[in-house]
Length: 290
Ligand SMILES: Nc1ncnc2c1ncn2[C@@H]1O[C@H](COP(=O)(O)OP(=O)(O)O)[C@@H](O)[C@H]1O
Ligand SMILES: Cc1ncc(COP(=O)(O)O)c(C=O)c1O
Ligand SMILES: [Mg+2]
Image 1 (cartoon, rainbow, N blue to C red):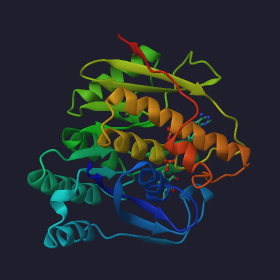
Image 2 (tube, rainbow, N blue to C red):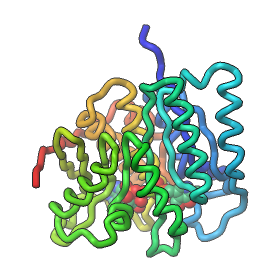
Image 3 (cartoon, protein in one colour):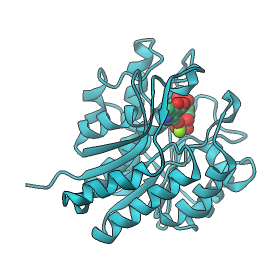
Image 4 (cartoon, rainbow, N blue to C red):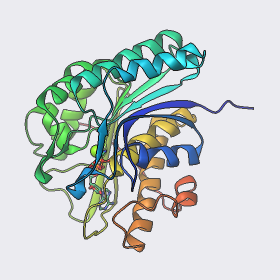
């Protein structure tokens, strides 16, 4: 029987609702991986509510927890690390040390870095040291990076002017080391208003995908975290990168359809669980080149 992969998922936890690990862990488990959640913060709720209670994990706890897993002889069973929102560059460096420790025991282990930089227009940003860390240090170690357009613009120091410009920006990020860059959400002048577009860029080629844009009174949070977690999971389960990309788009769309149907602000992950595992919709990625 094929072994079930294990993923160390290092990102935020919210008690109520879904963001970070609270958006990614259950869907990842539902489609077939064991998840080791290491929560970088425990907040009452996600920060887009404008108020929350809770605490950030001290950076020294990350290596301590990783060493704890090593001490019971289980660290070599880690097949991948996923990281999301970082409270500080110090927390990021502690994650990279953990990734290096895991790769030294299991060289096949993968690292997916979701370079979360918040939503500047909603007053939520990360310190400049975190965005510098993500570009200068994390990109060199990560196997996969999953920026959205804002994050890609921030890496490039400018706004994308066209789809081909987005592609050039993603290729520039790819040149820093990752095997693949998945742009979770494209935004550029001339983009069709009714579509939600994504991009996958690898050394082999580039693929563009469009799914319907759904109307929400308030944009749900945690979609990026769900996207990154599902993509990594499907790769671990043996999909090629393009298939993992197409599956992820379909499964995320199913969650958003359920969320919209329930008029819910929080993602309806439990109600959508069978559709996450077996999406009824399918979006085909089409190859594009510069
Ligand atoms: N098909 C869709 N229709 C409408 N909004 C969407 C759709 N897919 C994602 N979104 C929204 O687009 C925004 C950007 O998503 P994305 O960049 O993937 O991740 P993040 O959640 O990290 O910002 C999110 O606010 C999400 O709620
Ligand atoms: C605690 C927390 N974690 C993670 C996120 C990131 O969520 P998203 O997937 O929407 O980028 C947010 C967004 O507000 C958050 O508040
Ligand atoms: Mg995000």
